[in-house]
Length: 327
Image 1 (cartoon, rainbow, N blue to C red):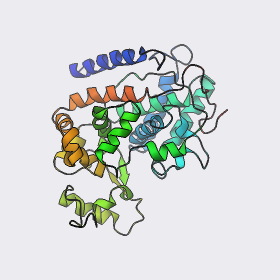
Image 2: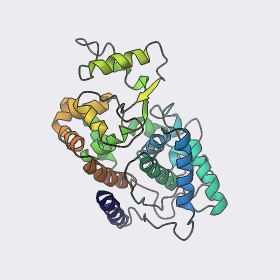
Image 3: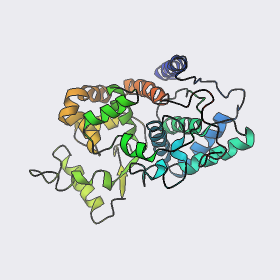
Image 4: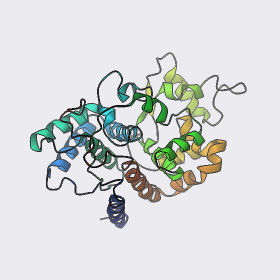
């Protein structure tokens, strides 16, 4: 077995244990369901693998679902709740966040084998980790023991989630607000090594960009022409790979793309090319472009930190029987 992979698994386990022992803030552990639901890991693996066999992109969608859950109300599964005022229908999530049916299928199986034991929030976190792993990314032990929140927060989703249109300093501030730092911004943006984005999220870079430039000058001209052709005459919902070099494979090509102005979203390329990025994130982009193993290590650390954002403590919240509605 590859020695660097063995080191990664060992480091991931140690990091998980360290975060799990931070005290009352977390109370999450790597072995939370070992006795109460030993089938958990096999069930989640099977459903995520099957979903990705049908659509490889689903790995990225499950990872995004976890991110968008944790940034609003903490990692409490609130993004799964149905209803017109739910987070699903917030502007950053509408026609964007996916994977709800996969979570539903996992939950249905778990309710058969170990009813009212595993929270929906934990299912989302674990499914995201397998989405990364089955895309070729690093393995890590997911901290578990979250409970499900009782309310969604649509306004929080509209205001708190980082936007691809925002300057880098604003994105950093939103990360800081939930306890994540500038390194986490760059590392978690690297999740865009897999997945797709809609034309609506980058079309402003393709025409009427500014008073002095029709196309974003930090966008490679050949890529810009290709994207203009893709998006022309559409409704903004056409999609393309966030990382055209390896659209479905988790690696450090995302960062290498930024060095040659082939970042798809403004917020991606801004990490390397914008004035804010030059001042605060450019050096990290260069580091991860040069060292994919370092990116994997730091990605695990940042994912564990993100997964530890304000989970409902102790007996707060509930274990939902159906992830779409409170009990």
